[in-house]
Amino acid sequence: MNDMLSALFGSTARVKILRLFLSNLTTNYTIDEVTKRSKVHPNTVRKELNLFVKIGLLKKEQTEVSTFKGSGKNKKETKKKAAGFVVDRSFAELLSLRSFILNIDPTDDDDISKRVGKTGRIKLILVAGEFIRDPNSRVDILVVGDAIKEARLKAAISELEAKMGKELSYTSFTTTDFNYRLGVYDRLIRDVLDYPHQIIVDKLGPNWKDIHMRKTRKVEF
Image (cartoon, rainbow, N blue to C red):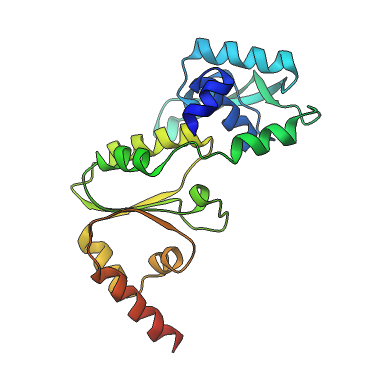
């Protein structure tokens, strides 16, 4: 579906930037912030932002950015004005465009599995929240595995955020820790498994689901 959007709108970069702004209607972003969040080259970001301003989707609006100098107790924050871009809520086709863009999934199970699967010996990938359009979920991605490299996992989540146009909340557990939490009916695990979610990868075997169901019935009784 994302390839189809890219074809319709000219490029993957354009779709990423559109998703960012249409998912955050009131947020004022600088060029640097759009570059960081969308993972699109700054020159392309400038070109696309100018195009969106020209057609009336975005408007330029000054914003305040913070810079920090020093470290520890000597760390000082300095605020300065910077050029920003924000959605023009008076854009005639805003609702239609937003509905069209945000109702098409920007990623799929294989993409999630491929990106997260490279971060360690992954046993379980579960998605909720933003991935299934449930704003009440505590996490968007839950990962279980061993020898997970946190830096790689964080980078994988960041890539997915760039596609989604939204910040994602995630949590990860070792297999041992997850099984322990499952056994004691941990609150976080319960809040994820008892509510809408989708399992992308499951190499834990069938027993873990049985354990959860037994715990659920025991609590309900």
